[in-house]
Length: 333
Image 1: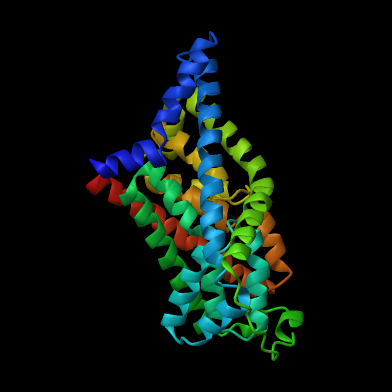
Image 2: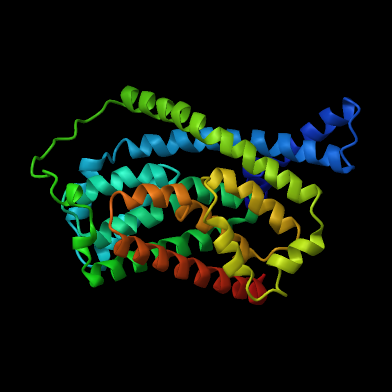
């Protein structure tokens, strides 16, 4: 079928996997043993993710060129209530790929006077859910799982932002942000297509330089898990027999720092070893949304009470998604 071809050959690049395997075999490497299989896994995943990364960043950056912060602020300012939270979460899907990149935009939106709940919906969804994660997840886990992941991520962002809004914690934002002069209206110039293409190209180069080391680390960890860690260990810790697997995966993900492109190879390897889907997705969400460096950076923008509330909401939401997805896997997959 056409979709199977798209998923396996275009997104999953099965042809590339076969080609690299044949080239390594021609060079005399046995790709069936641990070392050869690990090298095969590493080269294939690095090339595949790099190709998808560059293409996706280019397309998403071109789209993003139509939504600079000032224009995004005006768009979000037209909505109220939960509708504004939904718009904030959706705008998060076309922003940069890691939480540290999203925090300065969050600070700008907050200083511009947007409701706190709306800016937090944006802050939660931006690293957790983006168009790139949707496509890359489709290439590995399939369309159904990828779509459910994105929908659940958006639900956490909307629910989290709505709850923070109702708690009325505006006084917990750092004074330098609350007192920023945001009364000046800045007209967003209309960029010609050529300048948008240049912007998209520059974003590819800039983002690739920042992200590529994490891709190498992520794929390297994935290769070790895939070829060296016994399946029984993974099943014991992150499989269905451990009722605390989702909580453990969430806690383990927080100290790490990577974007979706760096963590997906690890998730792919864990899945192949028998870890449950919900447990893996909780790990991914924790890494991308609650990484320690991003929390340290966010602490400069908001006070401890609001930071703790943000962490608690995201943690509980991620754990609920994990157990919910495990149930979904048990019933339907």
